[in-house]
Image 1 (cartoon, rainbow, N blue to C red):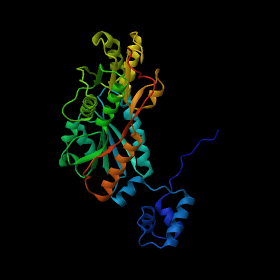
Image 2 (image 1 turned 90 degrees about the horizontal axis):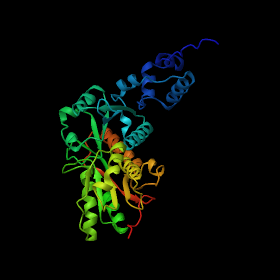
Image 3 (image 1 turned 90 degrees about the vertical axis):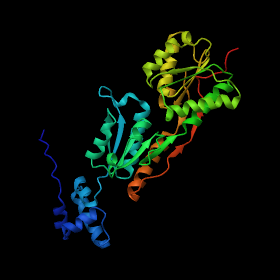
Image 4 (image 1 turned 135 degrees about the vertical axis):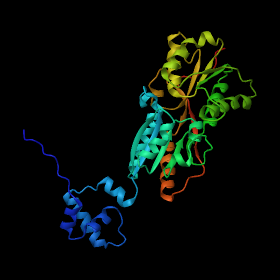
Amino acid sequence: MSERRPRVRVTLREVAEQAGVSMMTVSNVMNGNRARVSPSTIEKVQRIADELGYVPSASARSLATKASRLVGLLVPAADEDSLMISPHTMAIVGLIERELRKYGYHLLLRGVAHPDEVAEALRSWSLDGAILLGFLDEEVGKLTKKTIGAVHVVAIDSYSANRLTTGTRSDDFAGARLAARHLLDLGHRRILFAGPAFSGVGVVHERFEGFGQAFADAGVARPDLVETVNTTYAEGRELGLVLADRHPGMTALFATADILAVGVVHGLTEAGVRVPQDVSVVGFDDLDLCNYVTPKLTTVAQDITRKAATAVSILLDSIEKDERPKHPVTIDVSLVERESTAPVRG
């Protein structure tokens, strides 16, 4: 077998020599600065560049356009944890990368173990923009002009009032309201709310308030049934194992995330509690895994494809206009009824 030799990179000088033009002309054509170049020259340079297999240097293009075409995606992650702990997070990461690729941008993914590292990442990467995903509102609220610098920043799922950032989020209040209303319509009254601890603002707070509003709408007293649990399968399963003993008489549960709901379903099943015959379960997200569990999970569907596309659109528009966007965009949600909910028994 013959030894494979590395491919020799075609230089800008070689394209210029073949085309009989200056290197500056070739650079202008390759970088889109074509106002002073004739159409015939543009066509000639482009044809020769294609024939030679010339690939513009990303760093050289950045210098010419004063733009890196890099967008950082920052996601919270403890030092010992993998970024793949949340299926919802990874789904959005993939969708954001796809959207950025459409517009010629590159994604740099960074797990942030401490909020202070946000400033470090924004300063050191030569970014055109950054997207924050999964940060607490208080962390987003601490960002300052000194922290951000010239980088345009969009935050996904944030309710922070920080005017330096904006972004997109699902209608969390309406989603939880739909979930609770669905269970109430099925005759359930002892319905438990399960989700992470929350303060007076944020995603979980909005879902808690929307959940409660459904009871008010129906004129039904809201039961004092709340379990604080992190958004993981393992903690959901542990909760499911003890729910029957801890909350006798409970007939339904709303979990603030699908991965948590799936864990609860499995824990309940292991404990001998049938879903949905004994306890109905509703999640939030509508991830693919909802169709892969038994019973299939009833859930509130977020349009994460639209959420990711909107976040990228807001960011690129902000970069192009060189101004901070002023208002967040709220994405509608819907209820997807599957097999994990049923009318209350007798």
